[in-house]
Image (cartoon, rainbow, N blue to C red; front, side, top):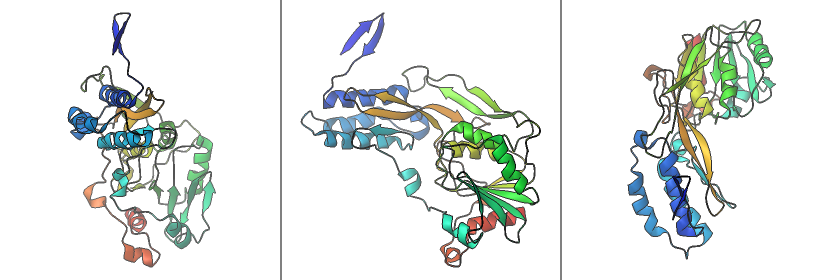
Length: 325
């Protein structure tokens, strides 16, 4: 039903199963930002799922149908949450090789003699004069002084490998904190596009945002960098890849990232469930959508080879080291 308030229509939904389905579909219809990029006909999706809904269904049955509908968006940032489960679209990474084994590096490259600051692992790879940094997440950040310490420790090296395989993202400001140590001037990081209305084409003009380099006496690294990614490089780590791969001293190598460039917002449904979805599109510095993932240049694409794993070698890391050498 529609209630008019201050001349603006406010749509309200019943709290039964059909009302919750309608509220879920409508919230996504009004606010989701990647229908066009993914070629999704949301009305067609509704026509397939709505007949499955009845008020005689259990809450679990309702959740399962609604979660399946949400997964039609193919979006790792879009989740339906209830008191008993949160839906999660996994095929953005589950249909791809993992391409990362943490212990393989810790044991066979460092003999467990690596250094660690918070969750970040770093050190000089034996006999290679190449530094290595693994950033497993951007959920928490390091201060500029902490990053300085790591870069100072690796300063004798000819170059470094920054490994963000399996980095599922986190806070974009933490990714920015790292990126600021690799730029020498104010740099366009990307653009944001906001939804401005309920239509699928109702978007703002792209809003530019920039990163500034760290100020003196903090360290700015200008020697070669190889940024190593896999399909589980997602969200804030995906955007970090977009920023870093645009820098002249950085080569992006490995496998295509997992994407996830939509900034999510959440809405509550009448029955108390919540829907979280991508509602703001973040573009790279060339105004390209990176939601599907960022592929390395073709000549720098590489996967792990299991024959190498059996002898204690990480194919992708060896490839990155050789690029620096």
